[in-house]
Length: 550
Ligand code: G6Q
Image 1 (cartoon, rainbow, N blue to C red):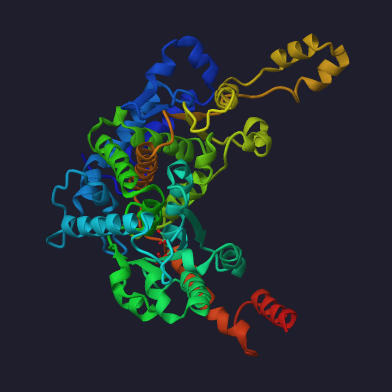
Image 2: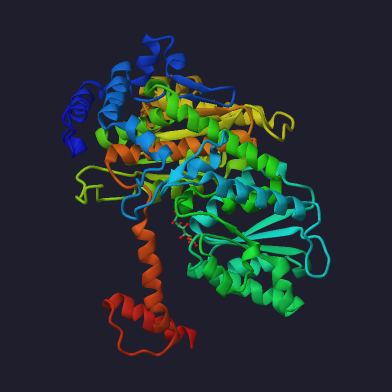
């Protein structure tokens, strides 16, 4: 078979375009009415951990078959093998993409540049285990001999969002007496608000930065270092600062002893790094055993992704549904709604994972792309969002496919709270799918005793078009294993979409741009440079800020 370089000119793509014309008017409520097994048929399970019910999507058997055909045509199977094998699939940075090596629980050799990377990975995990236990059980103490009970992760982007999301998700597993905080934003308020509540004698700072050159993280770390040194003196740094990085030299220059450094490697991308030393705050909060359970869960998803046929493969199914909406139905957005308070930061985490990975307009051949790539992702915790942006999701002119994530069992089974929560999420999915016709709305209004005029006026406002898609990800409980599987599921989904779109999902030139540009403007704000060479808007803003700050 000839490999068509441009995906939207390929045979499988054209077939999907043709198929869309046939099914665009089909209603999901009819699909359910005609097929009593639809719910079961369009569901996949990963053990007892995770159930994906994707039956409330605007797809038929044929749609799914054509989507899987597209995945096969793009040689997805080979690409999956290439990633797990350690091929340098991050082509713009010439790097392997091996966050999966961190979850290689059977420890088989994985080669990068002719060297097995597993011994180094295992050595760092052993160091994390010892250190996290020493902190948890008070063996590694602060400078004045007190137990370190406040853990502060200083990092941004991939060096923040993963550990922040995961420690919050696993709050129920935190050791009693240990507390984690996160400083990411360069805004001095982020630092001030955290430090205000802390005691230097009991605080451990974890400076998390892959490059150790990120201005936000280094500035925050310097401020925290000064705060500590002012209180306890310079020698205290050795007992209150550790670094997570790939850059030993820069860590030394910052004044952290490399013995207090936990290493990771170029083959672990920032937004894929919570499984590495970047997860040290997670390991201290919940214990290395639980951290390893998280790796186990991710590993189970890795295996599923590598071995399940595409038709039964959760990441592939989620990814191809996303492709269906994005590229064939013109829906360039989706929402992730966890119905679990502990997962409230998951949407922010996934926003980076998805939008930083697939927000690209050049393909791997270096050509500008003429089809849609990464969608806009947003979200928030249910039921809160039902009382905010759900209006648009039910009745707006834009369709927003939703992923609903819900545990069957809550960590806090208080009264009937959890049953009410469950009822809400189920009702949302059903309502979005079914909608409410004008006739149904009129009947309801009649039952409520409204007059004919009122019914005629209100029935449109009270109707819902329905046919609005959602996926259900049902978990047994939010525990370390399930969290690992869930996050790996989305990682692989994003990977599959990158393969279909033929892009490098593992660089982030847009983020690099921001880092450079701010450095150019900084001296212009700090000094009275008159010869400003920006556009007239930026020049005026710089001048106004300077005069306001005088
Ligand atoms: C993630 C991105 C980006 C990165 C931050 C922090 O994939 O590369 O979010 O994680 O810019 O970078 P450092 O870890 O190097 O400080």
